[in-house]
Amino acid sequence: MDNRRNINRGFKKLRVWNDAVELYILSCKILLNFPFELKKTASNCIDSAHSISRNIAEGYSRRSITEYHRFLDIALGSSGEYHSCIVSFYKAKQISETEFELLDKLHYKTENELIQLIKSIQAKMQTNDWQNTFYKDT
Image (cartoon, rainbow, N blue to C red):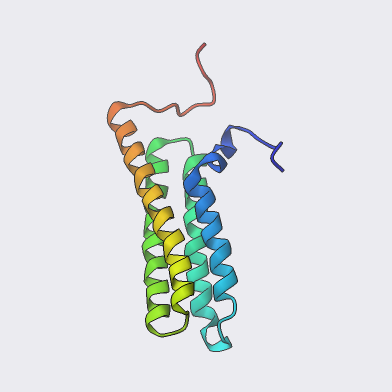
């Protein structure tokens, strides 16, 4: 799997993308045990976690800095949705304090990495320091 690399898969090197995937995996492990009546709610939360990594990847793959920034903002929105979900689950006693702490700790790390990536992209937008083509002058 690691030997299939190209410029369009560069997002896989990003710590934030990898942590977002780990957040999705951890969320699945904890939330898939919800009772039938809450499966839709748990699924929505899992989907918001998955949306973070998916939007990072989609934005990166579009090659336009404006598009990348837009998709990172969407990922940040999904991050906010995710946090709201887990806080609600904890307050409703649907997840334990230990489960909440595991989810929130990884989410907080991922969210802060995402914010830093957005800041970096915004700085590149200000300086026009962005290569949006596969062609490089040598």
